[in-house]
Image (cartoon, rainbow, N blue to C red; front, side, top):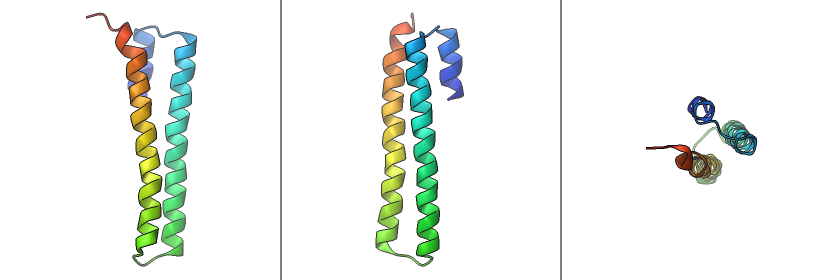
Length: 85
């Protein structure tokens, strides 16, 4: 996130691009919080190993990963055209 902000300032992205970046920051952080909540609830409900509990945790972690990958791709779409080699 810090690198995106630094590059955004340095490469002078426009207001729309800033809004997209901020929305993506919020999305990834929000999903990370939801993932943490799900993992905590599953740990409370199932203190011993359980395959379904593991699956729930894996799926919630996957949601964070997918949102992070999509955010990175969108970031590349925004930033690559602005980089003059």
